[in-house]
Length: 64
Image (cartoon, rainbow, N blue to C red; front, side, top):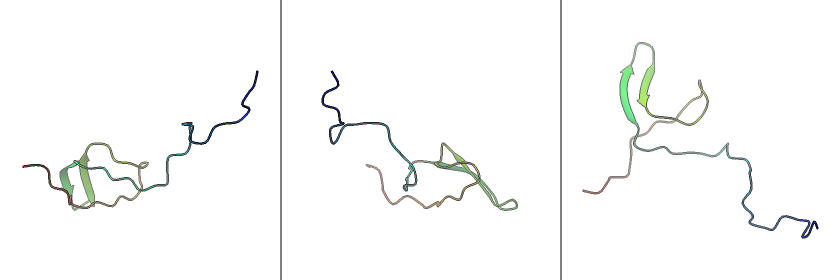
């Protein structure tokens, strides 16, 4: 029938994924337009259009 009638702890199910800080690496700055205060980045960035992003140089260095 309908046993066990509950969801076991740790069961992978759909849930919320948002509101957390996300770091995206290996994005390339294509162009800087200082007249319009724009930074053109190649690749996908998190968040919806028009939101503020924190841009910082990478701290991790790849293998030689």
